[in-house]
Image 1 (spheres, rainbow over the protein chains, first blue to last red):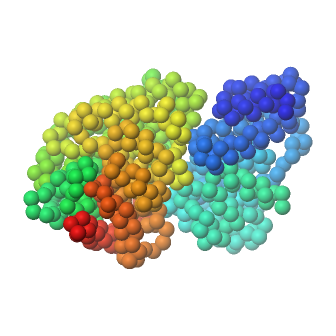
Image 2: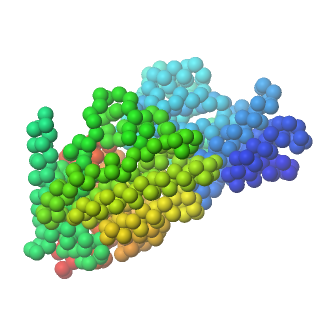
Length: 213
Length: 359
């Protein structure tokens, strides 16, 4: 790999925001002799390593959050330099934290990772009612809907969103992935979600597999 | 209104100060202290809230009954004494609307409350005295709870990342909060009869600690070490509440000198593992695992089996386990029946434990 790309990747893995952005700016300025697309690919590769470190228990949520923030900042620089339509897109994901729950960390980590992986994200925010998910699916025709839920007391809202999508005749047109501290694999089966994401990295990988399929 | 409040406090006190079943010549305080110091308590100490039947007298519970805060209309936005903007809601913690130090700018100008405004020594003293006379083990509450306070001041995301993007300011804030905690401990120690200082520090999620051990040791542990030293300097036990998958952090907490770990999710570590790896090194004060409790209807038989599984691994040890009701059942959807059933099971098994030991 090119020296600048190596340096950017290493900066991200060292959780060095300044270093990663310096390399990204160098790429965008044309000083590094590599394309912005090469830079995007390098960030994506670094995130794969981040994901593995997290899944192996080497890194924790603190490191995961910051790596996601560095990746997002680098991607903003690099993607601004890509001509419209030239950046490969994997599809759109509508995401939100369900009604009654105002926690956004898990959702935000997922958004950072999925966006960096090449997805377009429609982030509905927190405390999102089922009807808002339905409206967003109608408006954006996404590949997937991601539902986040931290609080046990609001877990029932996840089922309400799935019911609302079904009632609107949209359930067959969109995959639903759920995650958050209050949810489990068994819960995903109970509400007939398509997948449960134990963490943002796995969640991104699952949606990527849907995109490829 | 005032008379109603006084009657409510008195009726709560009547329950809270009532004796629990004890062997002759042993007080609740003796029982707890022997559990904490692995000195063969004659039964497992417990703290039940519905109705209140407890070997402990928890100042946090008393303060809730006394109603130290102003009543607010549901949905009203207000600023708390830490400068954190919140929305009044039905649960114990009102959600934060604005984290005033999210980007750590303005830290120098941000005012924290004085310790004396957080620990109401004169107001609490008569209650502590009554609790001690009733033979209870008195637990004072940390009015700062450093990690929780950092979270409300900074927001969770900034709390996790600030040590990397502004290590100096983050350390300065941590120091100020630790100073305040140490000062509060000094005031609490003026209350004759307090046995323990309890803090709430949720440093882990359902899958593991929030930060690596290295980050914990580098960024957080020095502040906690100062707090632990202050607690022990005043001859208090150090009780630490923590939720989540905490196995990786427990060695650090033991190293800090924590005497009691209060876990609401013991299953995330595993009952057997808790006893096998950490039994004898720190005392546990566990609830029935809250995630397990809310995951489905639990019959009395289910509960009995779960409590027995929690207690059994500790029976080979000369102490180190205490039992507890989750104190905010309505916040997580636990029914009063669940707590009734748990109370019966705990009372039953706490005594069975005596028979097990004597046999």
